[in-house]
Image 1 (cartoon, helix red, strand yellow):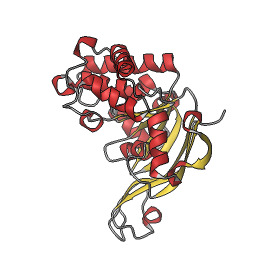
Image 2 (image 1 turned 135 degrees about the horizontal axis):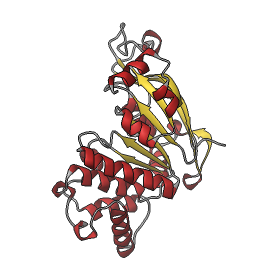
Image 3 (image 1 turned 90 degrees about the vertical axis):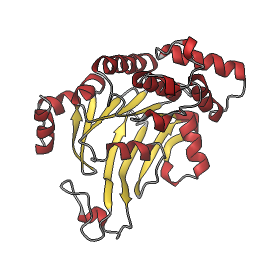
Image 4 (image 1 turned 180 degrees about the horizontal axis):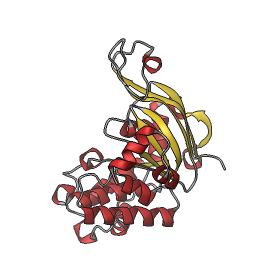
Length: 278
């Protein structure tokens, strides 16, 4: 089966790199001893397959969020390659998406990718209505009929458990859990092939977390969309994912089936993560 996403040696260095940052850092430290630059993502390679939910777990600062932002073209990669097999975007998995023009990257993002950020303020315009936030993404995807956009927005908000009666309210009036569900509705608007979730349950009450996780599981079963779920919470990873990568200091230190990773961790860092949350 051909991967939907194939990343090879993906890297992001923050600072004035000396050119040897990846060589001089490892899983024990991501700060280059020569120039002081921070290796947020250091040579990450993985495949994401159709209808798969891939987890990325690690402590704060391990590079998880950097990885999804590189995949979504929010940030420029320092090195490596990403190949997308996205027919809707005209991508057949042969061309390195990181080398495409900004216009073509936006085209891939608007036609085939969706992202839900940890902080709703990063993904929503808080002073624009909930329906307007969804419609904004539809506009980017090429929709022009106002009536059709409003109908589609109402459908998506209803699917993500936002009362249609509140679609003309701005997200600033909503609770944190509702704001996350508006983000999910917005991310779904272009029927993406790949959904990226970055710590979507952080800061939410346990009951609200459970509802958001149930929503994500239901959407995956219904839409068969490939997902990457980033979290420091092993409960979220166990609940949603089939395969997991463990990151530390910008590196992948262990990967495998989620049950295997959580029940029989091999790397000392993974063992520490699992034992700390028992």
